[in-house]
Structure formats: C-alpha cells, structure tokens
Amino acid sequence: MVTPLGRALLAAELPVLRAHGLSMWGYVVLVALDDVGLADRPVRTQAALAQSIGADKTRIIGVLDDLQRRGLLQRRPDPADRRVHLLTLTGAGRRLRQSASADIRRGEERLLARLPPGDRDGFLRALRILSAVPAAEIAAADGEGDSARPP
Amino acid sequence: MVTPLGRALLAAELPVLRAHGLSMWGYVVLVALDDVGLADRPVRTQAALAQSIGADKTRIIGVLDDLQRRGLLQRRPDPADRRVHLLTLTGAGRRLRQSASADIRRGEERLLARLPPGDRDGFLRALRILSAVPAAEIAAADGEGDSARPP
DNA sequence: TATTGTTATACTCTATAACTATA
DNA sequence: TATAGTTATAGAGTATAACAATA
Image 1 (cartoon, chains in turn brown, orange, purple, red):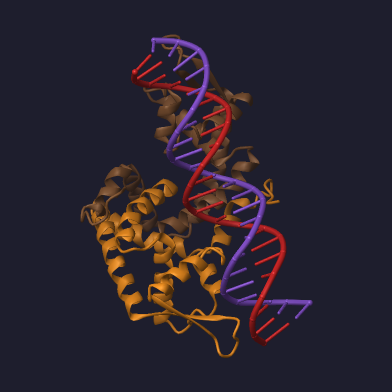
Image 2: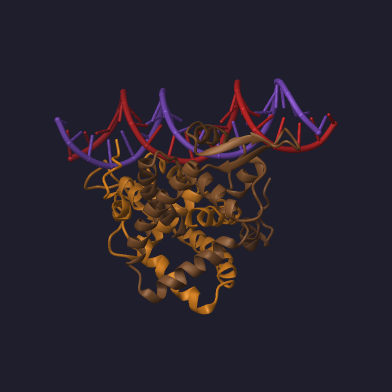
C-alpha cells in the first residue's frame, strides 16, 4: 500500500514543484540544506548530502549545478581542504524552498482532511517514527531467515 | 516521508520475494489475481490487470510468461472473444502467493511493533483510506492552482 | 476500422567506472 | 596512496510505437 501511495503522492507533487521550476531532486536538496542550515551540523561535503537524502553522489551534481546557476545555493571550496565544497543556501533558495513547501503542504492537508481526526494524528506520528528507522534495520527485519542472501 | 519509507520497504521485501523466486511485479500479479479470484469480477484481460496494478500492459507480459511457464497461472483464450486471455491462478500459484505474503507480513509486523499500539491502528486505517483514493484525485488535490499544466 | 496481446524501439533514471585536483 | 568532486559509460526499468490476430 505504501509504494502505490508514494507513487501517487510523488506524481501529485511534481507539477507543483515544476511550477516553482524545481525537479524532485532539486527540491529534496533544498529541503536538506535548509534543514541542516538551522541545525548545528552544516553539510560539508556533497557526498554527505547525497547520502543523507538517499541519492548517489553523482546524481546530485547536475542538480547542484542548476541550483547554483540560478543563485539558489552557494558552492565554494573549503579553505581547510580545498577538495570539499561548502554548500549553503542563499536567501532566494530558502525563500523558494519555503514557498514550494507551503504549496505541497496545502495539497497534503487537503488529502489528510479525508482522514478521521484521530487517525490523522496517529498516521503522521507513525509515519515520522517509521521514517526515522534506518533503512538497514528495515531490511534486516525480514532478511533474518537467511534464505535470501544479497549477491 | 512516504516515498523514502516505500523505498526502504520495497528494498526489504525484494530479498524475501526472491527467496520465493518472485520478482516484485510477479508478486503483485499473483496478489491481484488471487484477490479478484475470490471476488465476483474475474480479470478478463491483461490490459485490465495491468491497469489495476498501476503497470503498463507491455510490462507484465514477460511476467505472465514466466509465471505461466512455472505453472503458477493459466492463460487461455476467451472462447467468446479469442483476442482476450483469461487469467486464472493455479493451486500452486495461490499457495506460493500465500506463503510469500506470510513472509512479508512477518517483516511488516516486526516493523509495526515499533509503533505505539494506538498509532498502529490509526496508521493502518489511514493507510487503507489513502490507498483507496484514486491517483487522479490525489493529483487534482494540488494541481488546481493551474500554474502547472501537464504538456 | 477498432481492439487485444505482442514485439521492437527509444527514452529516462540510476549506478559503475575512469579521470582531475587536492591532500 | 587516498579522497572529493566530476565526467563518461553502461545498465535497468519504463514507456511509445509498430505489428499480428481477431472482432
């Protein structure tokens, strides 16, 4: 049930994002950078960013190029180690992320309105809990029979 | 949150399915055929089956070929209209589906055990409700601003 | 002519491997 | 030599278009 739902949600979000000139990965990157911007652990390397959003490091390069070209983020070499790139969101990037998020949230609210109020809270709480479970643990959950072994 | 969770769940299920010699689509087909087998509306055409599981009709052909070759389903021309193929699960197919489902459910239970009992029920109820919403309505939910128009 | 299943083709996404520049 | 980022290449998955059989 989760997979088809995710597909439908993604399909519903894409037009909204495109209205903001964003691809899915572009949006994901913006969100990730904005979130860590508030935290105390700034993302220092592109590889770390890629891993944190579950993407390959080679996959986000074009995305970063585009976002940088449009002035949504800044990418400058770390003076301490000039191999790594420091990634920071610009004001425009943060604003765009927020307006896109607001649009998406509107759609989500409309969908969540279909749920009984009690279930709605439980659903969101459960979703947060399950999302926080590392993928490795989810995979381990049923692979323990060991009858299946990844190559 | 839904998309990454779905990805993780799918990744966790694949090894289990492979232990039963099933691909993701093979399992989805088995489930779809088994479910409608109990209902009164048997799937009469491959195209209808494909649509019901959100796949392209060309995508399930190889899957059906494989399942048929392994004696898990029967595919015979409809006497009334010899263009369409009647699809029915064999006993072996139904048994395989059930044992695979049981394995997957075990993994799911282990994951759901992480949730507070109250949230767990709300989560599953909400999931069922949201899954039942047609994809078209989910898409319409936020595309109404009309600033985004599919090409 | 229209439709079902099929095959062949092209396209999109994603991952793997080779390259550069720094260390 | 090892690592961060980049580029180039190959692979999987998917959809689109052409085909044969039947209506």
